[in-house]
Length: 388
Image (cartoon, rainbow, N blue to C red):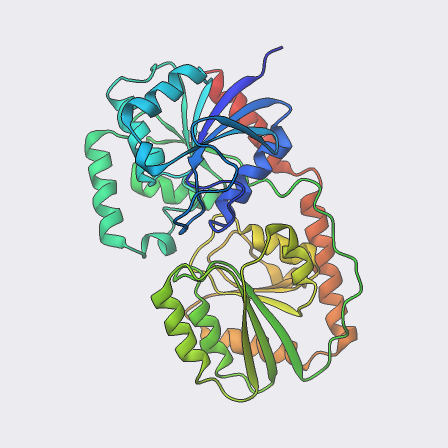
């Protein structure tokens, strides 16, 4: 039986990694479901923030990568006719957009659809990937709201199906697109075959804390807040920062704060990380600090758990009730003292107490990485949408 074709439009994809979670979300989907569906992916020919294209990835032809066919397009060659031709030639059973706000890879194709230049029989699925969360909309708010109102007025998203990954995200979508918006929920898929890291850790010494921040350095990821918490901590703490410095002005502000931290706080920037090395890196630390303004899923959070690294995050993600499970803490951003208290608490832990948290984090990560409920949800989502 011939596989049904899902034509995906996404801002960035492999071998890129600087866009973080959205790349991982689509990769995981292809690896879990690539034997069931034929994934064709349209994406840019360079990583986020890069000026040069990937090496060995000729634009305009299909490349095989991790259970999918990928076609890289160069910015000078975007055109309505080219995108229309790709859709017509591919003859997809589903158009799947991995952003609601990407100008070239969501809005332009949806304009073509609105103009009747795509076959109207092709169902359209749009995954906002957290773009309508309050934290995401707080950044460039006026510009985003202007677009949302224009899109509602023109009917740009009329008759699309929205893919939410949680009930909370479904409510965000419904808030902006109305009670009649069709929304289907299927959770994010974890990495296929991710195994808990069981290598021996360095002992945790009471009175010290090894922290790690691993993410894009941008306002949304909220590194400045993490640094402000450290300014209030009395224990000996080291913080290693990994990730691309996406927002240079924001990174300069972070560096300014780092330069003023007390002598008991040591901070070091370690640069970018190969995605394959993330779990191994988490094994070097006692806690992952991540006071993000909002995450649709947070693959990096799951990777920390798989490594047995407890997490200290904001309450702006789907990861809740962490302290009851003894795997971490999810705290409101308007209570900075709560973050400071947790940091002091973990700093005082000796190795035996810390190991309880580390083992429970690793076990929880392993449980979620086995065949997940979201796999069956995603199967059902695709089958239901393509049968309409």
